[in-house]
Image 1 (cartoon, rainbow, N blue to C red):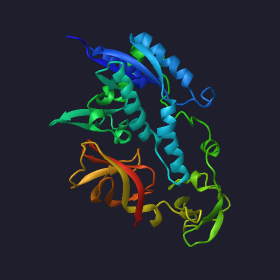
Image 2 (cartoon, rainbow, N blue to C red):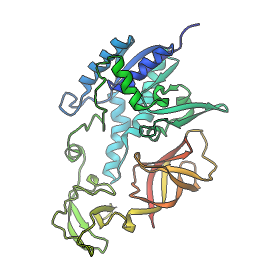
Image 3 (cartoon, rainbow, N blue to C red):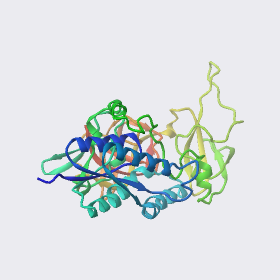
Length: 367
């Protein structure tokens, strides 16, 4: 019987490298695919594409798999980066990783892999796929500290049916140990954070190249003006540092301490940024949120009942229920108010370990 052919995305990082080795150990015919998703200034200090390709090719050599590079830069620019800029221009805070997974890694990459004759694709994400009663479920990884199901919530049945996540059932510490034992050249490589097109460069400098912006007033919750912002695109709800109000006197507590300032609202129409003092200010707490562009992994919306949700990646699951839902919209009601619910980010729903899908946050209701 012929081996099943798996095409795995190899980024040059330790996760996808170990995943490739695991698949080979499991008896698959494995081919590595290195995706080049960004071309502008990729030879600069901020973008490590060239080194990542060298690392991926070196690992493929050690593991004993073929690897090829494929250029998805045009697709990335059209489907991910253009949306990223539109969202920021509109004063929202998008999550390009979510869109990259849906449009590039599990669409352009999947299509390319199928043209290569693949039976399945694989990535180094920490998540699991399970076939259950004739459909495919996306589950959280066993290693809760690394679970990436949040970023994968826009996948559908067709995509999941073709996908393997070899790392879903092992902890990250074990992945590092395997890499060291195999003497992989990238065994000690740091995990990448952020996205190639920004890299380690100052975020504001990067956005300045692409967005028009207009300074405007910074106001307190009582309406008084306390400063000037540099453009609403450069701020996100809940932001504490870099607001630019260094000289602003804070109200002091009885013991002489004072609470920090936070970005609480962005009034796009009037180009006004509102800040408040104190982490638990009512303007920062939301009892409900509205989301659009809904995607349900099962192909249909959940029935309701008691579910849990994340409104940002590094957040613990919080209890909620679906209040209303339309063809591609829903409203969530939280048992406990949520902090700094941010338009443009994803609200992702879970039933235990099963990721149900989610949507892009449009708005929220303060307590």
